[in-house]
Amino acid sequence: MSSEQNKKKTRSRSPKKKAQQFEHILEAGKQLFLDKGRDGFSLRGLAKMLDMNQNNLYNYVESKRELWIAIRNKFFKQYKDENLEIIESHKESTVDLLLKIFDHFFEFAENDHAAFSMMHIIPSPPSDKVGAFEKEYKAFNFLGGTTRKVQEAINKGEIKEDNSAILSFFLYSLILGATIVENTMRELEESNNDEGRKVEETTQYGTQSFSSGEFRKYVLKKIELGITDPNLIVKESDYKE
Image 1 (spheres, rainbow, N blue to C red):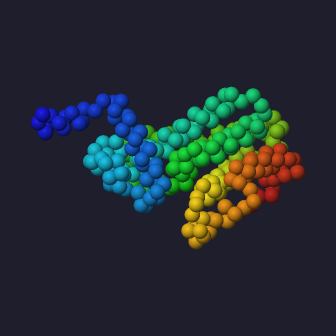
Image 2: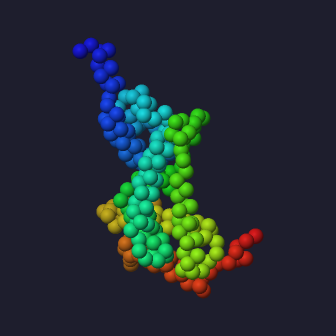
Image 3: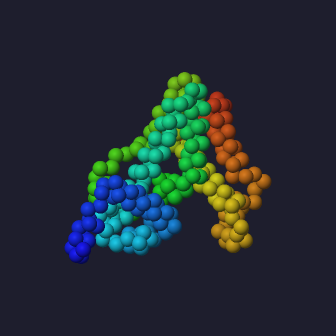
């Protein structure tokens, strides 16, 4: 077979094979973003990691910003679909549903920390041009769904506060921070090198009298009590400038 025929054969990869390769690129990319960070990540490094020609990688993504968008698209959709399953099968109060959604947030981060980091922690790489993924991007309105459920609970009298937007934003910030802390605790619980991590000032998370699992349960229970206790209502007059 001539080299020209071989090139044509390489280019004529089936749509199924191309989709599988793209999934492989997304999975490897999310891990490399986690390991290297936004600024340390490069498509050259990803191509090397995949044992792939860098020019061939450009057939799938034009820039690391495009790859960042594609990875987040994949996992936001996965997270949204999993949440929809929780919502559709739920039979109890709206507050109970919110707690299930928050617990799912913890579980998602535990099951795939790299995906969680891409969604909520690693910032977008800059780019001088807008690529195909960015042009077609449609916002997932991640926080909007929670806000609607908070408002539903307010309408039913389950939550006594009036401002669903700021309460939803507060709950998200609380859960996000708690999830990051819980992940660090879990890593320390599984690590045999605590001595070498003293300089990171994270060992304090591993020297508590409670486990990462107990911390998660505490956070969820504290949220439940906090949003349902009428004595803990924050009025707009308390924070409006």
